[in-house]
Image (cartoon, rainbow, N blue to C red):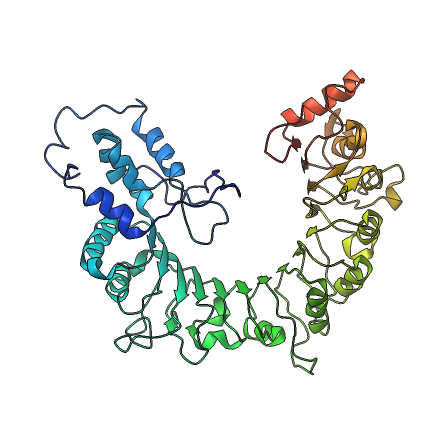
Length: 512
């Protein structure tokens, strides 16, 4: 029996861009393992014999279970939920691993149903039922591909039988044509999902707007995270029925028409808003009875057109966001970004930012420095920069940017409250001493005369202690070892050992 807690941290496994997810379907994987007549059933008497087969790695079961768990985690940032390894594969190694895997309920809590094989629908249903039984009541995360509208119904009804375990579900490829035998609603009646916290609905890109399957989550009191993909209008709530008052995170992707003021008015409890592939046009400004949104704390925008992002800010310029503290702009491959315009647009929101993430092609470094000197960024505690100039001749950040972080005059210092800094991209540098300003900020301490000790309290409450520095860029022009000051090298090593400083090449290897 598994001794895992109800939830474990995410896997550290990463899916590199150079590799592609393995071809996989629910049917192929399950049938290949559970349906193999040469396999001994996990519940058979031979499996439970007094002399169990030895574990090939010979570790305590608790440790082996944890290794199994992390091996089966999904690839990071993979919307299709592929994994490098699947629980059923353990049964092919040895009988001991099969015993342990079949009894470890945490391995089975991710359920992926891809394309349904019409000729084997009943076999798939039986195998899915066995899979669900092994979860032993644990919370379920479900990926459900609905590309064949009629034949998925038996599997969906089986999953609904375990609805009290649902915590997250993604419906992929909501069909653009409904079968004559298919109900207009995905569920027969409104159903209660007591633990369901996250719903993602990915509509087929070519689905007509007048013929969409309805999803009724009105009886989901815990629902707080809603992601909507390829819905063409703001009225997605007409097809995904839910309680708007409970939604705290909303993600919208590929919408051709978005009335953001109407959305913010509909979701008064919204704390996080994520927008990807923004429409090129927003409704014209109009008078509205909503003047401010008091809860929205985080905005994420991904777009390849800076002009579209500027229109987004202008569309909301009549509103204020007093709680907004986190802004993340992903402008990869964007046309030239106007830093001066960005500063003035953020000022319209009447907010105090404490975290700022920016991904864009860094072409004018001094424009970026001027942006960070502007008033909307005076309280920034976390700064995350990514240069998307990959494969181009641009140099990314140079010595000029890091020299701007000097704290010789605290009253005029750039980003005086900065505690976390990360950069990913190219460096136009020729020596390791570009880190001087960051090291100085990380060493600021306040001396307590009463206790004769140093603490990480801010010096004169003007310059914050820099607690985390992460730089990921290739070493092209210099090495740490060639620097001639041994005390400086020792300081770098000390900061690395304290995990304050991380220096990595693009491939993840450490600087030398």
